[in-house]
Image (tube, rainbow, N blue to C red; front, side):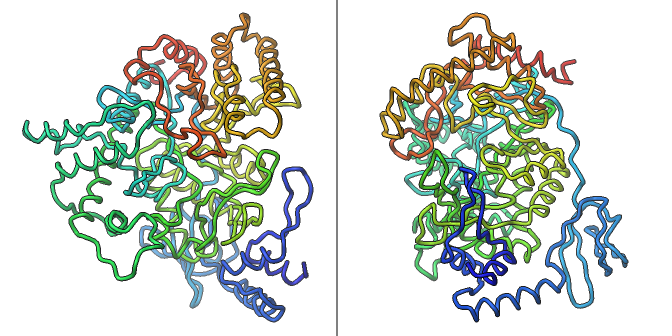
Length: 624
């Protein structure tokens, strides 16, 4: 690749070579670099175009950046006038000593958004808690799937047992059409909530309804099914809430836009890119969808209040991207790269790479707009929570972009301003009093690790990945600045791992690269290595699966990790994992309910024993 094209790519954050998963240096195809630059409105199709684009990049570098993010205590040699967030102004010879917040800097005829972020967040408390796929937490009162009423009840119960947090799957909004999107990691919007989680009976309108109307609403409740039927739940709840709808509420312009998308999608499909032009939404339907978001907000607030005595509270999950045809794609098109799909390059487990089909932020447009969309998304997620888990936190530094028409392996990384992305996250978390956890599993750049640790943000430690060659690392050697768990939603459950279910299901679905016998032998060797570690750590005497599961949680308790979390799937002995990567309809991803109801779970001896075990290691301050 010619030198000028490499210089141009570097100026716009487009990577031309990277370290592959096998340790070798991978060169990005020239055509991919040119195509990705084109997605950033940079013409690199000819040598003359490259020369012109380099000149434009040089001119831009001589101007004031559109957004400047400083860490508290830093100094930047820029003189000008700063308008603080509170409206006061001050003339400065250099940028230093400014209060935390969102300000404006004027230098001559140039202006910039100026963000001052905390140097680091307060040190997270030492606490334990539960990892919960909320849709799976069904109860006597929920309609076919766990809901925000179940979250409120479970959070209150967990707080009473000394738990310090409840970590959820993403509750992001989905499209309002059928079939309903099951994956919480492919949302329509990350700024609004999923109305499928509304508890109908907890609305003021239901409580105020007369007996006849309540009977009509109650008659719509679907029966629990073996697998969660999102379509049945949505049909039932939408019909019930339509009966209770009090009329259009007064809402913010952003919520009205989102509700307008929902109303249009209801008639024309969830992918706005296929809509005809000149559409007008039914005001009544716009009001209805806006009201649903108000209900979500009220019930999320009630759940957060129930967890209020916890040292952390409810920890929400931020998906790495959105469906490009969804609400955020429609509303935020000015800051999203049109046509790009986010994924991952080839590795040992995914030799063809991964295409997640998600839209990506445009780093240049984020900066040009003062990161307003990113800030507002964070605020919406932190409004009713004590923490935020950032899925694929490496995406705050760089993302694998796949241009239109290319395969998953035919992409490249595009860099983001990590100081800005992490700094704004720190500022908004600081203001919300929230803990930040980064999902940093897999190939992680050292700069990402430094960004997390330097800001008192936690990483992730998963027992299955705590390896040193063929051996498992004893828990006393796990990192302190982390949230530790036995597994994740994308990995085998404890019982599934111990019984080899993860091998059997992948063999049945044709996902194995070798024979089933070879994979089972490898799984058995892993099990023996795990048993050896637990025995050497003094955590296991009897060797049966139930004792091993208990020892796995004892390992969490024995680790120095600031936060430790148990999964209800593990404690209840479920063999099937919530999600099997690489599958769609071949496996019931995101549709597996827990084997017991919420009420039964709260009285389950194994659940209570695990709570006592973890509470002894991480006692809650409020119970001291």
